[in-house]
Image (cartoon, rainbow, N blue to C red; front, top):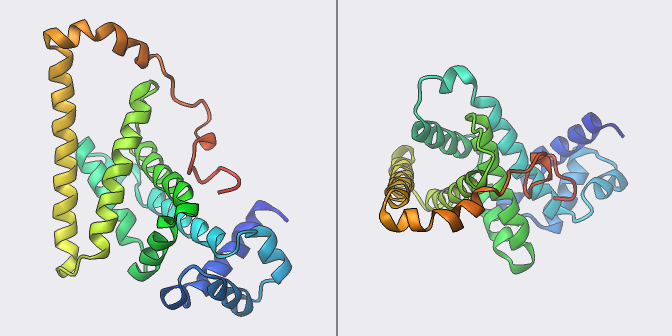
Length: 230
């Protein structure tokens, strides 16, 4: 089966599962219903999703990342500052979710100890997608620190958004702005430290870390939607 055909089958399963996940979660029941209602051959469905609903939940998250990247065109981002690009990207990612309950069910699934690593990989993948889409060109330790920081911001914002009943999710966007401001303050403090006497003393040890290089092939990083087996 070609990659395009596989994508089409997964999309059909996801569309069918969307009717059941809010009630049954990402469960065996929802997976079976998706197979029955999509008309996908059960053998094919299980071959593409050997972990059943778990694999569908992963595919759902990655599809959201892809939709976000498509929405982040260069024309839209052109006049924005970095912090505005990041804020816009995170907000776009959440606003593209058709049903908040599906995301809530996914958060519950990936909070389970046996799935926590997969959840962390997906969040990292979202952060990577955002930084890549807005034109990040870092190649050293900053490649990792940017994605780690944004992963924390994104995770916190999703949790806040899931419980936010304010009109237009205004409280969530205010929360996101505060988190981004915290990050910007951290970056400012880091720059001040680097220019301080202690920072200059530590320049040697910290310089060794700066030699850490970003992956040559981002698709090999955890959570990237090109990685097999997620």
